[in-house]
Image 1 (cartoon, helix red, strand yellow):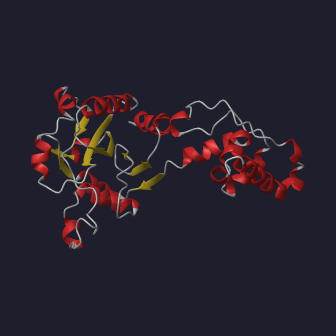
Image 2 (image 1 turned 90 degrees about the vertical axis):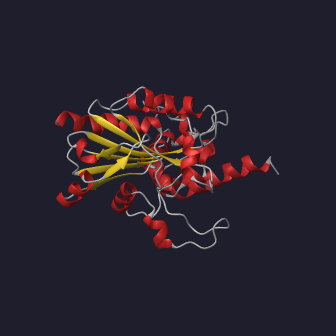
Image 3 (image 1 turned 180 degrees about the horizontal axis):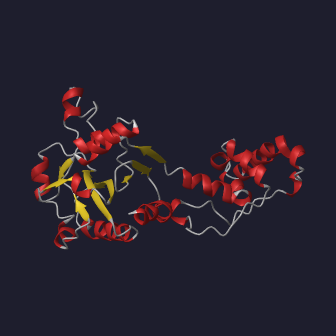
Length: 287
């Protein structure tokens, strides 16, 4: 059965190309797939692209529009690698939301407690680029080292005039008192000791309301919605979502005067760096 898979894949590729072969004059007989190359994972995507499509750009564009980057990964990685690369990078959901004066005022009126219980006023971020992000934690041993490295690396990408607000949420289901659980959590102890003025570790915050499942069969929707943190209520309202994906970090980049917000979901580090270099650095230069 396994030996049939490569043949079926090549046949599928040839059938897909045959529908447009006359228009673009492709010699189907010469189409082969180099199986020594494997489609890249997210970690393999380079920041500087040095490769191009082997086939004509119009052909790759048409195949991409027919979802062949997903349906025929081996073939497309061999012949339309650049097209699929650009598609993959763009899938790190990005959108820009413009704020009117009322929304700007509403954003700067927000407050939130940090990990040590101190109130942070968003109005103090007026004139700075503000980034709000969610990050899942388990408080397992060793997580403090990994979390410190990740946030330090991410912060190095940022412009100087930026405040990073990290809102942790619990990855594991914890059906007991959150405060007791937090008191035994050492994930952010070292980061907080450094007292970095522009890196703010926020208090545990409810990002989404709970939904009914086998653990909680009856829930009052309005009561659960009331438990969602006001910052996340505001952000979700702007993007038109009831829920933020817990499996991916969502980045909300707000410009210094809160007139626009860029939202990136599940973006790999190279894409984040590219966005920071091309957009956020422009915001900083405008100050």
